[in-house]
Image (tube, rainbow, N blue to C red; front, side, top):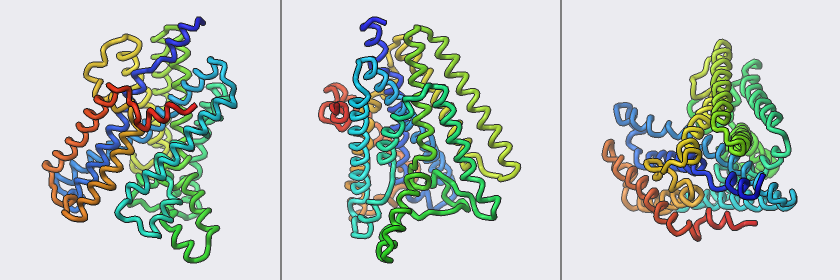
Length: 400
């Protein structure tokens, strides 16, 4: 392959930015909805129904975010390998970026609790694992899977899902509740609970060992975004990256379509089969079954990404109506961090003086929600015009 062909393959892919923008916009929409919809939590009429619809859409944002992270990592690593970078330099690059994202995760956690930082809460937040923490750690861990051929990564991902299924359901066979991952999605369920904000209590009991054990369990399984199952999405993202690069080199859009569609349909089918079979033994709602959730989300990602890639990259169409989604996709880290500052510092602070959180009812609650939503799109468009200079994403891109 000529140097020019290689450069064309690894140029910025609009489809990735659009998927990333889609994920971050849904995430901030959900978080602002949760803030301004306090009254909807107290009632069960139409307001409560609308609140449920708006917030449950957030179930797909994090899986898409993690999958895009794996996709970007896969393409960036292939680009550096073709540029003859040593594996030591590549790993150093990934390690620095991953570590910075973890540190930003801690900063974000403290900012979100800005007005409530008591000594016990500060200590609990040190041992609290959230989205940015997990993105950074999984960026580092997923790098090591890139030494495997694509088919072995598929086997690894499937193996992780099987292991997750066994860990989830086996306690039921011994008379215990479900041991569910993705804890934040299953509120109200009867399941084994690992407390996330008990570190201070354990410390006061003089049991630092229990603090560390609790922290490790959060990272592995029961935190907000533990390794299991989120690494599944990262690994599948690297597989999508391999498919993109292979078929872009061959200039074979139909081949890419067939491969992505094949994986999507297979995963959708397996997800439903597992769900139907498991429900004969352990009846669960659709949104609670972790295997079904993982498979359907990654299938949806592949189908959506192919559509965006076909329009914006392969066909070379003007992004047009998708542009407002692509703008934030170039600043996901910055927008995520900024929305945390707005909610954690500005809105929570204002709410301590004026009870704005409980002042809105539907449909009036949609006014500030839509306002912030559109405001971030406009800000991203403006910042894109200046090449995103001095944003967190720009700073991250400068790490070598």
